[in-house]
Length: 186
Image (cartoon, rainbow, N blue to C red):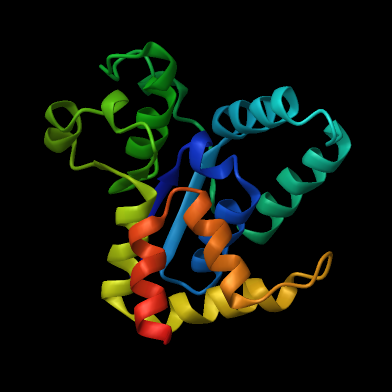
């Protein structure tokens, strides 16, 4: 059974990384999870930093995500937020959603906000997306390569190649994963 992972808002923020992680979910190598609070945070940040994007287009993206992954939306975890002891109170909802959905992993760039000393006793680990993808590669290269190839094939405006997708993912914070994929796909 695939790893159940909460995707923090920061890893869903970048379209190329979000697309790739969701393609890994579609390939069955991860069971993605998020909450409305996580999506609110993500899309609010995108709107603040990308005035060229409309609220309506981001709402469509959110709807597509929830329709494509009907079991991904975690609900009913709110009572766990107050009991989640993290350094930043604004991140407690992420841990609460992880606990409620029995996720073993929180995929986040903000590792310092999810200390192992708090998470380990709860059976949860915070993992940088680069490490997360490297683990998926180690589990089996085929589905990861297929996700990259499909992402490249689906680029139409402008058209893209596998090299283009890897460049974007490297820019999104996956340098070691991209290096490994380049070596394996050469």
